[in-house]
Length: 392
Image (cartoon, rainbow, N blue to C red; front, top):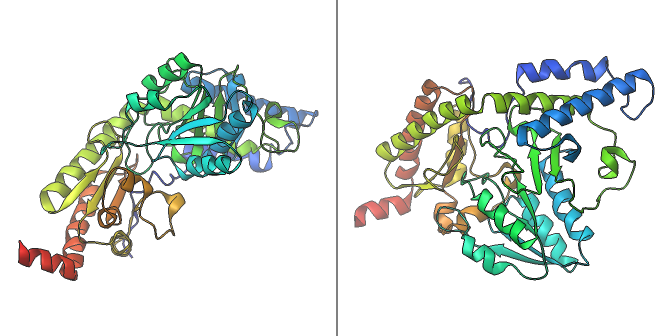
C-alpha cells in the first residue's frame, strides 16, 4: 500500500500535536463537571472561559459573545432558527444563497415548513452573489441574511464586508457560515458587521465534535435545545471541556500562522492548477480563480465520473473528494456546481483537492502524475470520449 497522501482538508484535518497535548489532561485528570461548585469543577470552568476568550480574540469579538456547540452544523441551526423564532413577530423572511452548506439550506427548508419565507439568491459562474440582487431581495419582513463566507466545495469567497454593510443599513441580522474561512481568512466581526458567525474546530487542526457560534451581544435569538442552563442558557448540555480547550488552542495557532500558511497553500494550489491545465485536456476550474480559499482547487475532468476518479486515486494512496463530505453517498450532482451553471455531466466529473499545512511539492507532483495516468486510462474506456475524439 502506498503511503497516504491527504488532500481533503476541507472535509477534516488531523489534530495538531500542540492541540492534543493541551487537551489530554481534561480527559482523565481534570475531569470535573464545569457546572459543579467544587474546585475541580471550577478549574474546568476556568479552562472553558480561557478558551472562550481565545476564540473571541481570533475573530475580533468579546468573550461573552461566544457560545460553544458540538459542530458547525449545530452552530448554523442555532443561529438561523434562533434568530427566526425570536424575531417572528417582526417578520418571517430570510435571505440565503443556492450554494450554502446543507446545514444552512436544510435548516431554511425546515423553517419554510413552519411558515417562514426564504429567498435563495443565485450566484454567477464564479460562485459569487450579485450585491444588487441581494438588495432587491430585501423586504419589510426580512429578519435575517445568511450567506456563507467561503464555499466549502469551490472555495469562492463572498463579499462579506459589503453584505454586512447592507444588512446593517436595513437593520437586518447577518449570519455567515465561516466553517471553511477560519484559519484561511482574517476575520473581524465588528469591522465586517457580522452579527452571527459559525465555526468548527476540526477544519483548522482542532478536534471533531466541537464548534462555536459568535452572536453579537444585542442580537435577539432563542435557544433551540432544552435542558440545563449551560452557555448562558442558550445551549443546554454538559460542556465538552477537552474539545473546547482544543478549539481554543487550535484557533489561536491558526490565527498566528495565517499568513505563512496561506502563502504555502497558495503556492501548492496554483502550481497544481497550472500543471493540471497544462497536462490534461478538457478540464475546467470551478469557482473564482483568484478570490478563493488558498488551499482549494475544484476541477471538472470531462468524460470521467468523479467516483471512478476517487476510487482510482484511493488505490494510489491519495485522499480527495468530489465535493462536500456532508453530501457523500448522494447520487445527485453537487447543488453548488449546478448553481454555477455546470452541466450534470461536468458536475459529476469534479474533483475537489484541498491542501493542508503538511502537504509539500513532492506530494503534489505525485498527485499530478497519478491524475495524468488515471484520467487517460479512464477516458480510454469511455465510449463518449472515443466518439468525441473521432468527431474532433
